[in-house]
Image 1 (spheres, rainbow, N blue to C red):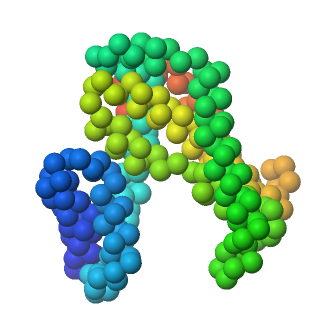
Image 2: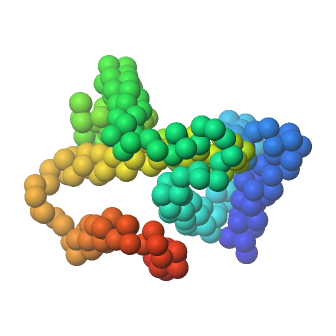
Length: 238
C-alpha cells in the first residue's frame, strides 16, 4: 500500500502538476523542463511529507525504464533527419558532413569538461563530500568534469519533439551532437572507474561484462541493416 501511495504521489508531483502548469502557461516552457523545476522546488522547500515516500521505488523503476526508452528512440531519430521540415534551411542542415558533426560534438564536450575539471581540482576537491573516495587528485577532478559535461539528453529530446516543423531540422542536428557527446562521456566515466579500481586488461571482468560489450558491438554493427527494418529495431528494445 505504501508503494502505491508513493507511486501516485510521484505521478501527481512529476506528471500531473507539470502538465497542468504546462497548459496554464500556454506551452511556452517545454514540458520536459517542468518536472525538473518541480523537483528542485520540492527539494529546496522541503515541502514533501516523508510518509508519502517520494521518490517511490516503483516510480524510480518506471523513470529509469522511461529514460532508457527515450534515449533509445532518440538514437533512432538521429537517423531520420528532418526531411519533413518545411523550411529553406532544412536540406542544408540535413546534409551536415560527419566530420563537421564530430568536430562540433568535440568542442561541445571539451569546453565544459575542461572547465569542470579545472574548477573541481583547484576549488572543489578539498571541500567536504567533494573528493571521490577511490580517485584522488586529477582523476577525481576529471570524473567531476565529465559529470559537468554530460548533456541532459532526455530533456533535449523532449524540447526537440516540441519544436515546430520549421525548427525540427536544427533540433535534430543538436540531438545528434548530444548523442555523440553522451556516448563519449559515459564511456569516459566507465574508463575513470576502471582506472580507479586499478584494473589492467580484462582483470576482474565477469561474463556479464563480456556480454555487455558484445551486445554493444552487435548493435553498432547491425545499425545500418536495422534502419530498413523498423520491426526488428523495436524487438531489440528489451
